[in-house]
Length: 219
Image 1 (spheres, rainbow, N blue to C red):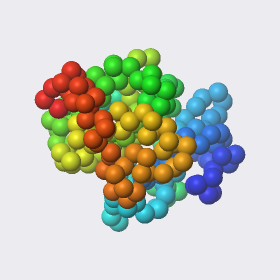
Image 2 (cartoon, rainbow, N blue to C red):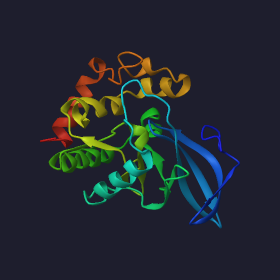
Image 3 (spheres, rainbow, N blue to C red):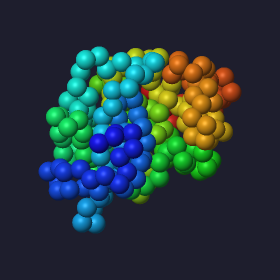
């Protein structure tokens, strides 16, 4: 199966045969799709091994890394989708589908509620106490019935440079840039340069600092 264009295919899993119905997004490790069978919906993540200019997985198996990350996050108290099935040989995993609003779309629409900032700050505080960062890019969060979910499983050892306050929140504050990035796929709409993975900061310092004072004390 072509992981870059899997819509319309089916995949045999321990949950039965799933029809891949919709592309959801691509991350550093895989392509995510909405899949369904018998009226149930799931997220299928098909791993890729495409290079990333600012991140390396080394020689590790990405499915095994995700399973380990899921087990760690499950203990952290962060709201995440349940891991339902794993196939290391076929290089995929299946997660619970969280039906809600993608935070990126809320940012683009200028409709991001303050409760999202409050909840992501609480996540950051809990994870920092465990020595962890998650990927705070807004594509990785869904708001469902007022609850913010981190729908990826990736985490890394805590590093101030890549934490919520110094990295992630600048994407959450950049509504026009996120809209342009989604339309053009040009990373310079949101990053200082194409391959840096470092967000544009200066125009958004005031709003980020306001969020930090209000919701992210001690983060």
